[in-house]
Image (cartoon, each protein chain N blue to C red):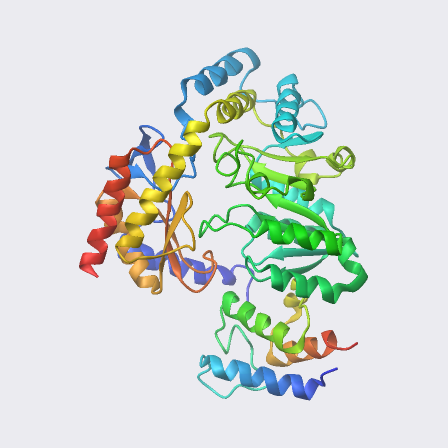
Length: 393
Length: 81
């Protein structure tokens, strides 16, 4: 087989989609109108798959802060955090993140992917063990592979299966990094973190939680699943992203472990890349403040999530196991998912199409994500659009 | 400890029950190529193997597994005390 032959299968998928006349993996947003509406492929649509949980992308305060930073500090830092790329604002955001989480140390990364990938790659190396949830994000899988540790996955959200595997490790369990996510991005389900924290007492492993989809979504103060499950003390490292609830781009890790400051200088995805631009840091700082000042956004997000989940469940669709801002419709036949996605777009509802192997199992997904900025009327329009699929099935 | 032969017999049985193979499954059958297993299906087989043989299968070992025989050999190795 020649070097590029392995891409034939993907080229086949692309040709199949072209043949069907749909572009689910490259639809172009021609004009973004608000956190919840855009012109996509010539149509005005409701954005129902954006991860813009708190709807802060058009917040006037965030925009003004970014504009000010752009004018005063320029378009980019043009350097690594380790060289010329640490501005006072990067340090201020790290302090604000540490304060928000009530932890002593914080690192800001240029993307969420580089945060989870970098921490996974750096924390566990040769001779160590990583145990990760089977449905972990690609950045987690990629990171731990780079690190060179022995990688063992446990069944998704199955603390019993995790324990069985920890028990098999014997003494090595204490030299293990366990990684889970707060809220899983595909099905919107939540890790059994209290059970996993209880296992930590028995096996003494190190625990990292990716709160990418749960920051601003879960917990009384919006810190994520560890807060809502009441087990923050059991979590050694929290990683996350700015590109969902905070409406910008970037990633972070916070911890009480003093080692994090030494780890910082070992993370290749932190060192060998340019730091975030001043405008990004400025809008993120404001968004983090607004997340804390406006708990009503989180309440509205959950009202919208429950409305959509109940509406789609009422239509008889198979959904993820619990209501959450990610509402995923599970579809057994890939062809049905490919047929339904453009029908929703035609009706002005733009959701995410997920087909294997990107979906967590052999089924396909029409994945919706809800925002606090969605109106009830928009949620109801989404439900009505899905109802027509049912009617035509 | 499970012998290579017993692991092979069980793996052949498991793969047969998936009903994917168009021809007879042998020791040398290629899991992805000949049997057409997707990455998700390979992981489902691995999960079944882990439960049945009471082993944890490191993902690092997957890159060395191409055929039925490779899989049976790895299970025998992991189930050694």
